[in-house]
Image (cartoon, rainbow, N blue to C red; front, side, top):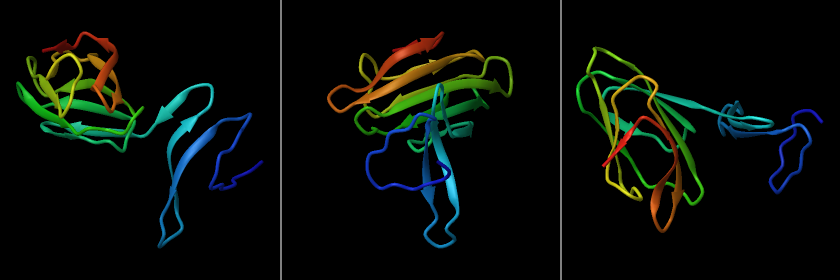
Amino acid sequence: MANTTFSGPVRSENGFESVSKNSTTGAITVGTSYSDIITGSVQALTGAGAVNLTDLITEITAENTGDALTLANGSAGQVKIISYVAESAAGDTAVLTPTTLAGGTTITFDSVGDAVILVYNTTAGWTIVGSNSVTVA
């Protein structure tokens, strides 16, 4: 099967792509692909700012010590991966404050390679299901 668009549930033996269609131009943009591996679009965030809910992955580059990051509440079952990929100078850090975080209020990234995988739960908020070297407070 080639490129086909369905509006209901679909089963595939070769994976899926989540796409959006521009209503004016008709251009198709791939958001997330599902096959043997899960890949998703990436937000590159430099310095303080909002971690978006539209990309699966956010890659953070810190510019200062304590760059303030925010994360709004998501949708039930939503997955968000946040990775600290670079810093402008040694000692830079980023502090994420989700609107609702199960088991804490902030997640601090202070070394390149720090990462967290979150799943949103409508009762508990963002829940950490995996992490590497982040500090939760």
